Length: 503
Image (cartoon, rainbow, N blue to C red; front, side, top):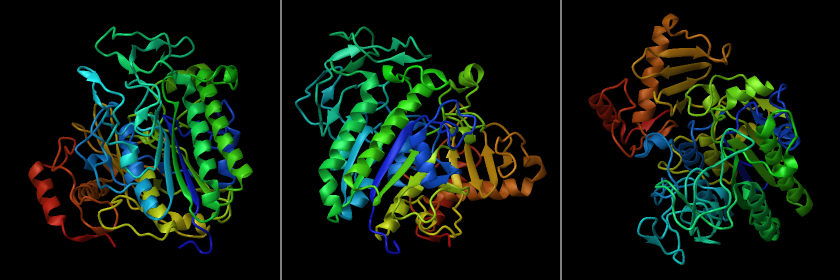
């Protein structure tokens, strides 16, 4: 319950490959300053044990929007291309559809990367006068402006609604980035593909314009909805930025800032645009009644060791490994919530486990619209942590997945973290005194390993990790569940269906 606070406007800002150590307020040794992100910390709640639901892009975005682990779908690992059947199936509740059903205006501005159905095919020809379908406007969003996927996947164009504002009729390949270890997407473009993997690109598309365009459009849309928000029709904005994902391409005015090279400059630019959002809210009179959630889809890209060596900047914040890893650096990410009218005793640090999966249940509690049994099966509300500084909250065990070649599952339950690498013995870490996961204590705790393995298997098999009626996964046993046989798993799943699980 809101305890007197009104239903807030909600903005979810989602960065791309930003590590836990890439915010100056969270990392005393950070080699650049992020004053506006630091403001979110000092004026909100910093969840220092906050996790994405996966260690790569597409699965984390699915989990964020649906409150359900992506490996419950037919897509078990890796990421999508820009053109594919949307991973969010028709009828699946999302943050946007749930809030829209409660009277919210809804918008998405930024990077989607969950699949779209474009008109025609690249091989047989496109008709860009026809609408794109199976995309954000079909998943609960009233308005969409953005790009289909990461910039290393064509199609690359500025889409508004169902149409590319300028059709992607040209082609390009990745170009060498003169300032970083990655690539650029920038003119000149070609009229025909040079190679089989050429990207379809619009003549006006340039990679370093993403942050500016997205922030401009977001502010324009919020400005158009400001009066409605003041009159009792709040808005929900999902703002997934492309930074600091490759290509690392900060605008020239940010060059030379900070002490971590172009990567630091890119995050300084990101922080600048968050400041623009904060300025808009203050100037429009919406600041008090607007909740901002700021987090990242996974940990830092594999260039993080080079930044340690060259700049002494650790994007992981001392955690183990980074993007694609099942260890903490792959999925423990910045997780900040600011809401002036709602958060009791702002400036707090919350050190206990929370997940991006939990946004759906949290928002549902705040707007007093409970989820049904087949919505947000892995989402647990932390709303009371915001509203009551003395509230004692414990999350159900959280499942992590590593998208490296091993494709490991892991389970975090309280201070204990179980890792199940395929073809190897189980690993166990006590995160309360070994956050860097340096010491495997599984040999000393075989009973705990067995108990956590059983818990992991049950949470997967019963189609939900939160209390409620068991649900069906979209598939039966799959090969990444290497510790349990197909027969045992499918039998367990069948036994669970139709039963009440949890407390």
